[in-house]
Length: 397
Ligand code: 3PG
Ligand code: MG
Image (cartoon, rainbow, N blue to C red; front, side, top):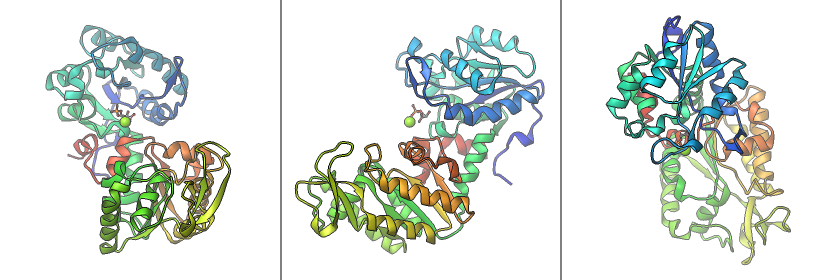
């Protein structure tokens, strides 16, 4: 029994349903370059439409600063949504007021309408009750299917749930279910893999994880900070030397919580930060002064695979090396494939998300074999940090 209401708990036929979706998709030259987020919300839109709801989509796009601006219009995205769901999608040039009301009034049951960027109003990000009320005037029900915007307490992500009957959409439901299995109430042992460039951007995340997981694999540039804090000479590698004390504190916290920290035991070193740069594997006692670590080494990969084998649950954020520059993608690819194989074999529940993670897993060609890959960036990180997500919490009231 989920702690929130879903689409199973409501009769939507003939109702005006305001559906918050995340259409903040990458666009180049007016075309959507990655429609994953649209594909994720398609089931909710189609289910509501098939059940005879008047489906009114609410979304933000980019971060417009001063009201309406053509480059932040959702209009081109309406076409992209229509293409994905293979239905007609109407568009209204305003999210509130006459234009929105007229477009809503014209909707027949089952029809779909996208309203203009909610962030064209300051009231959106301020969660201003006046803007909330203006949005709510066009709906009988509210459905939130935008987990990836749930770390924002905005009018369309949080405020509406206070004033209309609120339900989680299918993607939100799947996301929360996956996250519950990942860290909320996981099968143990739980292993986390955390990579990426900087410790400084992931302090809260590491601090929270060491208290929740049985083992924490640290890779990427941030591993260098931990290695250096233990006296390893990391040459010219990316390293936050000023965070040595913080790294040691995290390790002490892990120790106290019985969380094993798994750091690289060897490294792939190159002399230029570029694809196919000449490189060699070194033990940690022999990193050249003029070299830089661009990936974890082969022995580390075996150690990480063993940790994956020991786990029943795995949570992943961030690449283990400079995966965008081959061959420094090898550890990330090898670990991702190992996780995928274990997941496919039913031995592992694997949840991944945040920032570069999805790109790294797509690059490894295995995103589909993970138990769940979140399209959320900031929201996934804040969840991993153990922070409350306003858009989720309000659904649980
Ligand atoms: C995202 O793309 O991370 C979400 O849509 C949230 O967007 P924001 O970071 O601009 O709030
Ligand atoms: Mg963001």
